[in-house]
Length: 329
Image 1 (spheres, rainbow, N blue to C red):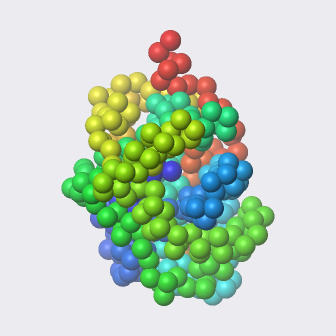
Image 2: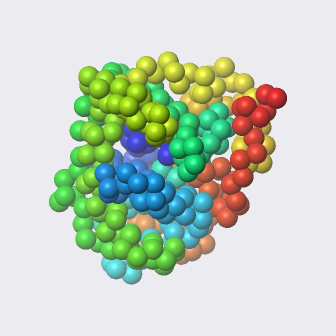
Image 3: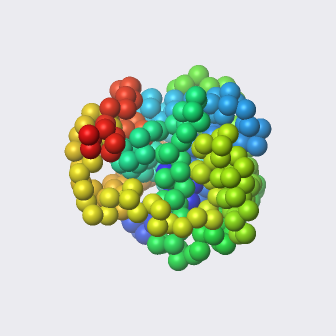
């Protein structure tokens, strides 16, 4: 992640940064905002069937494969597949990979290290079920909604932002996703998983996030809380002030949780940096697509081969060495 709404806002902000030639190629840009959920679709897929830990962990494991491994290779395989199929000129095919998938990965890569540093974890602890990371990202969603969209997250019908018309999803984009996932990671039927998740996302947001009366907050925190300690990662019926200690707005020192690299950037600094760098990447990637000739070296020169977990080189294992708690000792 960050959370689904933060990615959604990022997609909308990105449009303001893209050059006119890129925007001319994307007349339906606004209709495809859900594409920016990227590899998180593997988590949202059949979410209501994942009450048991095993099913949930399987979705997370698949997503982690995309987060930590072969980022450049997947992007190249996707574009090369689209070229072979003959659909590289289709708007939805290009929107999925550039402003969508790649930008999801980039925002994660820039902001995840800070969130992990302050939360002290990345994924849900399978034994304790604690997931501080998810709780913070939920609060960041609320903060970003109020900051950028001036809406009250407690009452806003957020699920409406995640609906997509089925006519907008072509068979070609699903086939391209399917083949490139198989070629890169060996995943079978990955295109079908993504396609199904495209339409399930709005339901996820309605069931898990939208909470006008605050009843879900009570249910998640008071009833489920003692048994499922990651429950505070859900429901937007919360005060965003709770996230302030994790945004580093006062620019204190924090460390990359894997290698200890120091930074004093705030969450908003990292967000803006991802926007600026991301706009350049999307513009350059679109130039390649419009050339109708996909070459590995060209793609690799634009796409940084970084993990979305820690922002460092892919294939580097994530080892949680530095957190706010351990650094303060």
